[in-house]
Image 1 (tube, helix red, strand yellow):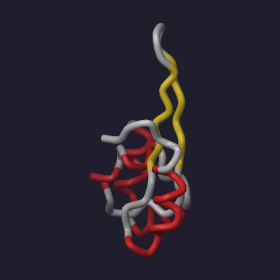
Image 2: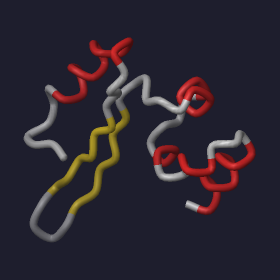
Image 3: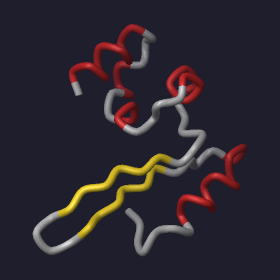
Length: 75
């Protein structure tokens, strides 16, 4: 997280450090919005979990539908 915090601060977006864990595209980081879906997988002793970060901006509805259609639930 410290790496993301430093990189975000350099672009004047220090509060975006957690978003940058999954927002990898240069355009996403510069604009401060998610453009494409990103996945992060981990497992617990009982479950396999996939976190899906999907865009919420109206210009990327198709990408949001692609991401959310893969989910069993959302937060």
